[in-house]
Image (cartoon, rainbow, N blue to C red; front, side, top):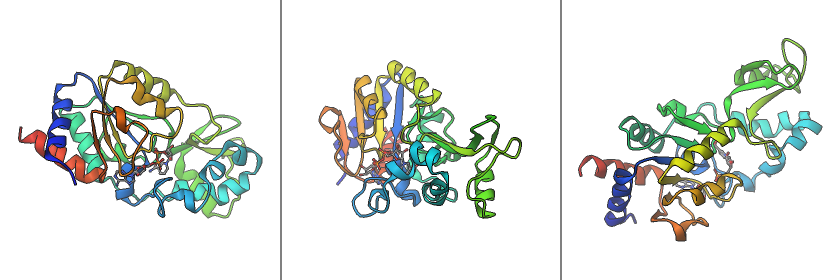
Length: 248
Ligand code: NAD
């Protein structure tokens, strides 16, 4: 049950903040039909081990296995559409209530919803690149080659191996992560939506921000230090926050 007092408290925190950010994880996209990693029964953990399937170890040492297994997780996201939570974050940014979104997601749904400042700290599924000559291509190039029966997609220019621009387990963090840390240093409110806050190093970001709103179905390690916590669906809570902000 969502308490009116908690919604009002969250709205006040957002309105009083001078530099608010959202931090989103896989849970914001489950209502768009993309499973997360850790929800019991439905998460991807149960079906395969993403730490192995989406690792640099498999990508580099057994690329055929990567393109046979891990790649399926990535391409399962292409037809998903943004949901209310993604759309309301874009609206809050438009209205100047939040200053950007740091996302662990690779599903492109914040962009599709219209968010402008998005820090994709685990990369994206819009592009890929050649590991030899660094040429950039659309993600669709990988899909085209895999669908044509090619076991390991190759660079059309130099024949090097192509890889998605997704941060795999074992990869270095991208430049967006550095930018996200700089944003977090400036910020006085973080709205965490749909993240177990268990994946490092992103899980250290809430420690950098004085005020915290958490919207997550399951408990997180930061619940005790948050100003307000909602253990409910992201779309439902965000709609209540948006409606209350409009009417107060
Ligand atoms: P996570 O899977 O560890 O945690 C997701 C959390 O979201 C869970 O605690 C769950 O209780 C909660 N949740 C699920 N549905 C929800 C809903 N409707 N409303 C509110 N909360 C909900 O996710 P994470 O913290 O993002 O870390 C997992 C890693 O997996 C990240 O690195 C991310 O890149 C990657 N991942 C991304 C996608 C995606 O791009 N959509 C999907 C799966 C995994």
